[in-house]
Every structure is written in structure tokens, then in C-alpha cells.
Image (cartoon, rainbow, N blue to C red; front, side):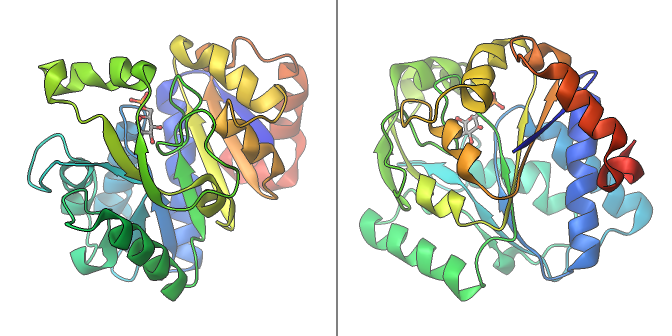
Amino acid sequence: MEVIIRKDGQTAALLTARIIAKALRMKPSLVLGLATGRTMESVYGFLAEAHEKEGLDFSLCRTFNLDEYVGLLPGNKHSYRAYMNTHLFKKVNIDLRNTHVPDGMAKDLDLECRGYEEAMRDCGGIDLQLLGIGRSGHVGFNEPLSAFYSRTRVTPLTPETVAQNAPLFGNPKLMPRRAITMGVGTIMESKRCIMLATGSEKAEVLAKAVEGPVTSMVSASVLQFHAQCTVIVDEDAAANLQEKDYYRNVFKTEPQWKEFH
Ligand code: GLP
């Protein structure tokens, strides 16, 4: 795992977008794992800008979203499908048939989850997985005690997650209590992970995930076992990290990061 600290949320999101853009330029048929949430909105904003101003080409890119609420129609403005269409897909030249978000309205949800795993396999697996972190330590919607080997499945949301996301629904009662999510095992199979966390409300859980013991009580901590995981944070989210000087030095001196300074 490597940690990069940027001064604020915008520069952290910009760096994340530039890494994704570079990966897409190197492999136009990139299989991209995508995340939702407030943190990601700026990342998608920067990617849309790169498409508009620099011609960043999404025409061959395939995408798989981490999760979707159960019981929301794709057209519902609170669904993650709608989020993705609004923030990224409609702003770039991606073929919508190459974009995948689990169907939270599927009649047979277990079949939907198995089919989702199969579709990822058919594409050769995820090349680059973008991740946020919830206050419960979740990645995707892998709440505490999600098995390290879990696969795409339906999962109940914790009260903490409901409290975190319900404000987005206006009326909290409208927020679904269950979701489909890629499993921890699914995420761990991606070739590369980038986790982005910004803002002081993430400081406590981020320190647990990055520097704490690996435990299924904090699903994101399992990323410490991932062979290529980059964690990008702003100063606020980095507040509780112990090894900040070391992380800063690595970013400043390692040749692979030079082009991103
Ligand atoms: C949701 C998503 C997660 C995301 C998290 C953080 O719960 N399922 O994938 O990481 O929100 O959201 P935010 O960026 O709004 O803090």
C-alpha cells in the first residue's frame, strides 16, 4: 500500500483522475471499476474535462460499478446508475452498453450477483478499481464483518451507513436498507486499486484502514493485502496517520510519481 497526501480534496481528486486517465491512454479497452459517493464527483468532473479538452477517449472502456441499492429503479435519481449517468457517462464518449451497474430491481437478486461476477470475468477482470471509504470502513457496501473472500451479493446496510447516506434522499425513509455490492474478494482480485478519501470525517476510519490491524471489522483494511493499492487523501483525511512524513517523502522522491507533481 502507498499513501499520497494532497493539500485538499480537489487536488486529491485531480491526482486520482490523472492516474485513471493515464491508465486509459495506455490501455484504451481498460476495465475500470467505479465508485459513487460525494468524494467521487470531482474525480468524474476532472475526467469529463479531460475528455472535453484533451480528447480522453472512453469509446473502448468497460466499466463495472461497485454497488447499487436494492429496490431503486435505474431511472430513480438516487440510484447509482443515475449518479453514474449524470456525473460521468453522459459527459464522455463511453458506449453505455459497456457500462455495468448491478440491477437492484432484478427479480432474482442472487442470479443478478452471479451474472455480475461472470460479466467481470468475461472482460478479463478489473484492471483498475476506484474506491471510496464509508465511515463504517466499508468499501463498496462491504459493511463490518464482510468476509475477506466475499463475492458480489446482497447485503444489509449498517445504521451508520444509513445515517451517512440518508441525507442524500431528502426523506431518510426513502433510503433502501439493502444493496448489491461487489465482495471484498471481488475487489481484491482487481489488478490495481486506488482509494480516495477526503475530509475530516474520514480521518478516524482512514487511519484504522491504512495503519490499523487488518480486520473484517474495517473492510477497507483488507486492502493492506493488495499488491498494488494506492491511497490518495487530503490533509484533513490524513490527520490521524502516524507515518505522514514517510508518505510525503515517497511521493516526492519516487520516480513513478514525478510526472504527477
Ligand atoms: C457509499 C458507497 C461507497 C462510498 C461511500 C463514501 O456508501 N457505497 O462506495 O465509498 O458511499 O461516500 P462519500 O464519498 O459520499 O463519503
